[in-house]
Image (cartoon, rainbow, N blue to C red):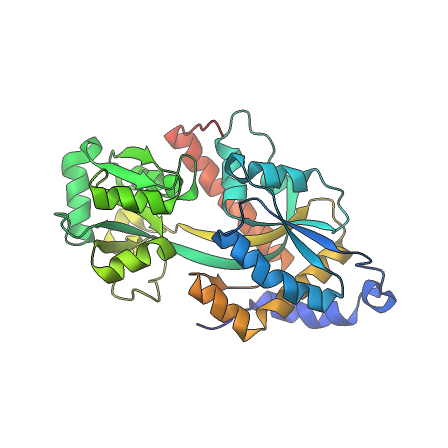
Length: 327
């Protein structure tokens, strides 16, 4: 696993380091920074934040404190940052859930892509489709045949209503023109447990949750839900490879550092530099790999583009599949 800093971010970094008066005058930051994580302590987003925060603090010369504000599908912590003073001292380290959760709520409490701006895309992590080892679907072609033949008689499990994994499964249904019955669980772990117990026929799940069960032989990995094959499972084809109707299918989670939309460019650039500084540490990349994430590092503009693109993609799925969740 290698650290990858995007070309645009790499080209922008020298100018950023040389230019701003903020650097020379030491005007920002003048006090500690609050990094809000919209999930409980101990989960993957929290672990990622606690890995990055010390390296950012080292670069900035000010403390970066992790502040867990969980609840309502990540919208409690996200709303807190949306409403914070836009001075760079309050930022959000969130997963793709901070973008998706408001889209499935009615009325939508806020528009995350309009209310927040990116500091840096931090990492990405793939999703994977798995079935029990005794499933009649021996491969992804057999799975497609099974879904066409049995449709809504088949149950799929996800990490919860309105989660990225739920929407990823609904996108599969829309692109393939099949029906499946959704059963929501409170996280990927319980969904895997339900699969093993025979409560559901398949699970759309994150790779870290599935890996020990795949390696132990209890479940079979049928397809990577991302555009490229997964490094841990190079023999597992992608969804897009499996059927022409799934061309462009690409479903994954990511961690992104964001700030209120009106935050000035100066603090955003300094925070971005700090995030890229963290990305240079090989020990950080190694720890991210251990929890199933690839450390990326991007420019703010690249992150904003991704947010807009992902919002459009998932809002379309929410509307077409008529997904509404009371979070």
